[in-house]
Length: 219
Image (tube, rainbow, N blue to C red; front, side):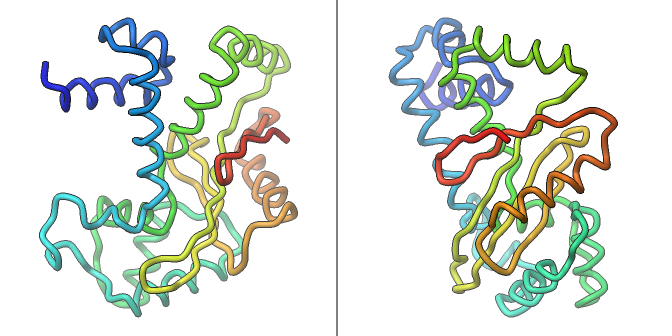
């Protein structure tokens, strides 16, 4: 099997929640090398503004101008309710009378910092850091308390056009992206409010793990 195909297979397995050690054994790889590959793979998703460029000719994919993107982001920052992909599609259509496919909406969300693969990536990193057995113990304890784990990503950075993008996102509801945008860097109060709104979607108590700039925390 070619190295590229091995890497792709390894990343797919890691994204499914399989530990670094198990994937290394399955594909006969050095765990250190695999860990380095996965670290780089996750790191690449920290630059979501490039996602619309990979594998496509420039200009063939774009549905919004830079100024239109800026308008949409600022409009999203005004929303106090939780957002999802379908709502973003509707907002763009109403604002500019442009019908954008859901896959393109997903591309723009990645560009703006909302990326399900990144959320899954830090989940896998934390499991690897804590160890599969230790984390399984945590999961069992939460299950006993009739709770559920929620993985939350906090992002803040500038897009290529200079627009600042601040967001909180999760894949908690049947693996569908749920998120909010903010005008300023995320503070504790915004995180607490996001989780409070999210908790209304579930009957279980939420145990929230969140990641920001490679720091893993639990609240």
